[in-house]
Image 1 (cartoon, one colour):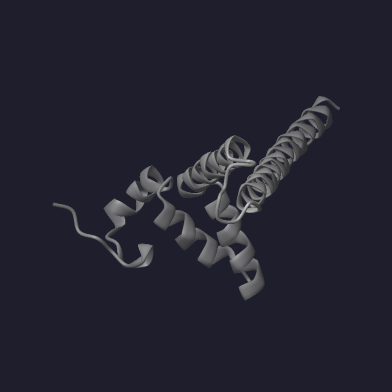
Image 2 (cartoon, one colour):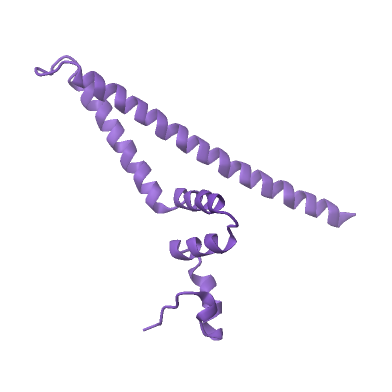
Length: 134
């Protein structure tokens, strides 16, 4: 069994190299964010950015998409068939449609940010390569 250490500085010297092997863990990412953030606002922004890239958020988005699609379906099927309150299917249809629109806009924004990061890295590599040629 391996020991768990609260802080990398309290680890024995021979296990500090092992920290890079576990960097993909969410806990280590949060630890790094805490070390690198200068202000509380920067910390909160970085934590949310990390959360958005995690599998927890992916699961949440997938579940929200399914729920919104089911709302649309039920609203369409029972449009004029609700004996109690006839507006309920309309509410389901509108709510599901707005939910799907919000989720798709959120995913498009995330994808655009990822492409901008890739483009920035590509431009940086091209600039570095061009300056090395001179």
